[in-house]
Image (cartoon, rainbow, N blue to C red; front, side, top):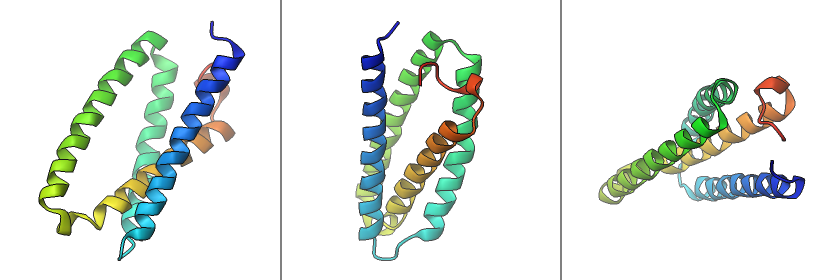
Length: 131
């Protein structure tokens, strides 16, 4: 069983990573010449609607070991998608640049909404133990 200090450090690390992604998204969004408000809003809503229920159901239905394995798989798929996206963005940069900041800002905002919703009104049995 993890100690209270290590649990707090992990929670602080996750929060710091979320804040860093949100800050990066805000800087990218602010630097975009036509700020893509519609795209950012659409991605925020889509991310919140998909990520929230999927994460809560996985926590409720899967064991901790199984969730850890699936997180490794999801991280690997995310790295693969990010590297392919980087190659496409480098090849077609002028046409894809306006969509990048909107996507990043929307995903960061959607993830923040899910984290806030979990803290405020998600039932206790669907929350991560120890948070």
